[in-house]
Length: 378
Image (cartoon, rainbow, N blue to C red):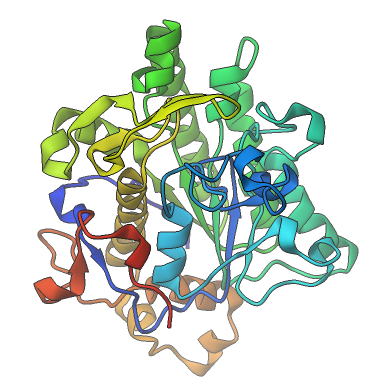
């Protein structure tokens, strides 16, 4: 069946992340994106393993290859899945040896299509090229992408921030091509993130381009939503959009409700090569630097992703798929089995009013707790 869902109605309950589900039914977790999803690829290729203080991003003040002060949404969602994607730059011999828990192909600075806006001389792949790095070896060996894995695609920000006369239609087409290629390769469950209002990040204010970036963000998101809807109607792929734009605006409208005290300035002043100062209270900031969110904001992003998956489960999943009680014939239906994995990712007992999985208060984690100790895998 065709699946599409917009992560809407994101409320304060999404501040609370449930501990890892006992029965996470996705086999692997694959990530394609830019600095918002990079857990260390750019850091590795810029010498971070040798001299972390001069890498991109430098450590400190950035956390272990992330473009933030601590863990990012990929880490948090991976924790929920019970999966840790291997960095592409840590693979022996490229993708010939496929890790058992997935791969993170994201590079900080990646454009939506080809190349890199932040590290231009290193021939690093854009989001569409990252998908090619994953799918081309599969096609060459006559294999298919794992239909029981979860795939995530997020990009476009660098095109608008650093590109020359960015065209939302072309940028969205790059992302749509990435999703389509994954689907053609055999992927069945794909998270696709839209963009926050780039006109409201510190970088936009600093360079006086807020209005332009707001217009581009709005156009990008509208075009992406329409394109994903058309794709979902013409394929059997479970496309699960994650509405970061709405989340971001809700935080800006009610920062105190989400635990933030500063939503306009950044904790880090300067750039990667020349850091002037770093605040001592990043937990109060929405932005760690002029472009990238803090780990507190990253937690909200993964909460939005979990909310999208949860809503997908609630709205699109028949009871037999949630429970796993389908016929022997259905067990041989790969499409139905892949959909069942999406349906059974989170426990099915969800509060119909709030969308929050029923659990005791002690089973939830608020963003005010230490991110570095969040639900570590044993």
